[in-house]
Length: 245
Image (tube, rainbow, N blue to C red; front, side):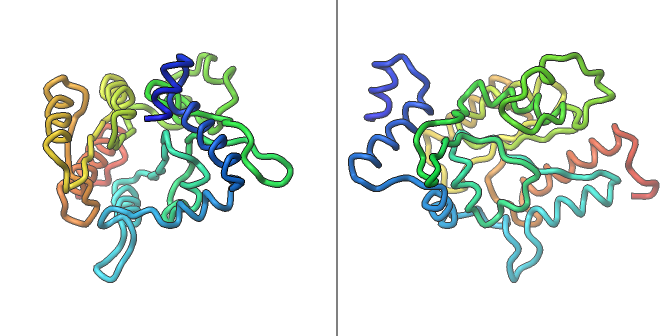
């Protein structure tokens, strides 16, 4: 509520104002924010079922990568998040991702956060699809993004992308993915409430997403079947599907 009030008062960006508020509170409490403290918080993130390998079998990434290889595709995973990159870096599955685009701080020589460096919000998320599409894996290089690049030269074509979104800040990106020929899936917490349910229904009725599924990443779940099916469709369209598969 405090961040929201400050954002309205300053007519600012909600993510940047929230990050600045974090720094202000840290200074007031003499508890500096460092990369390490944020990374430690990231280690405690609770993951949805099936993401990590466990005694019941391979995790999501192993299974999806294997399905891609079976269909002649090299799968890459990315994160585009309004959350903090430093926390994501501490997450147990960070190494599964080719690159992370997220909000982050600038640090002084002692490793203490002093200023928001990047704030990723609703509509800025969409630019990162173009960065992935053109192989520009940083926040600062704009010339290459604006320069013409023939579709055949782009490392990751839009029509070979599958975007999974789970929040309000993902809606513009899901819609753009949908219109660019890629695939968007709205995933929701399996324990979702009625308010979430209405939001999910509206995403479908307003034609903003291709699919909706519970965030259950276990083998044989609806999400697992949808993504594997889409990988098959991408392989057929790309001409990489081996004969007899």
